Length: 108
Image (cartoon, rainbow, N blue to C red; front, side, top):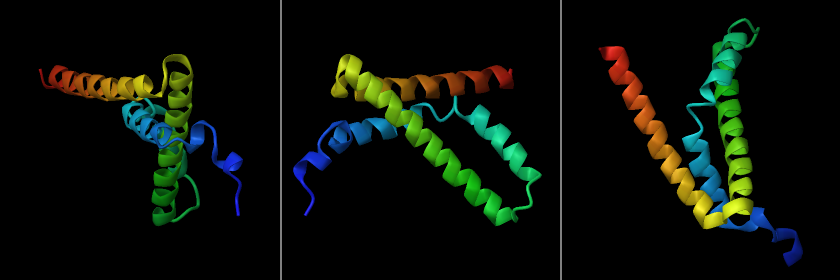
């Protein structure tokens, strides 16, 4: 039987995980730069195509979740967990706005 002390702290709060997922979604576009370089380096690796795709998907998910969790924990410490999650939703909207605005600029 595990003690309750093992499951206490900020990582035991489901709100922290929800916020981390929201931050991972919000920060996925800025993180695509390092992932593009990783994808380019994978093209010269001896891995088969399926292995390269698996490595790229797993690494991108882990990177986004790790950055999202760190951002959520820092935001929770500074402004509280509820506000940090709300700020993540606003960041998602802002990222979408920037993506659509840049697509309009490229089309003109």
